[in-house]
Length: 244
Image 1 (cartoon, rainbow, N blue to C red):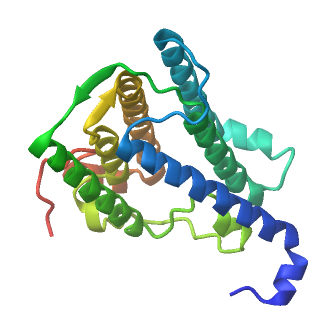
Image 2 (tube, helix red, strand yellow; image 1 turned 45 degrees about the horizontal axis):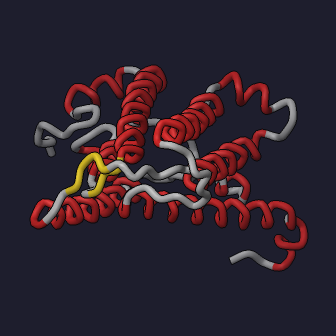
């Protein structure tokens, strides 16, 4: 719990943290609803199907570029000219939340139905969604720190850089279980309109590309440790039983 002196001396940081949490929770909740219920439209521009799909694709591209550019070392070095390093993660977190909100608010749902599950298949897909959502939080909990909003650094709780690989929970089965669960969550929707099908394809491809790039970076960072880990744990799909 924060003491009054800390709040008095760090008012701007407290306000920034509250803003980050607000944007993060709102965008996360809206995205979860989008995945579970299917696509929806908040601001309707009255576009025809082709125009709506082009706008949806453009919104997705903006989100992909924001994530891909802001994680690069070159961008972080450039950002250092304008703000202290302690704000970099928060800047990334805020930009990610705002960009995701922009995607969800301006997304245009189309009336064309691409697929629709019914009966037992519908129930099984709903169960799969809830199961993978539980797995997602299990994977997050298995990591020592997953500060996607950059709050820990602002609050002076910067975690130590890991010196070795410790595989726990789902990380004994897959090297990137969070990405695996997100891909399944994306596709575990029993009602697919055409725009949602495009969303599923584009975002799944982007996640797969990001998985390969992150895996490459981890090989460079941990060297032989990660090489040994990758030799016994699959990158994404858990097709082998982990050893004790």
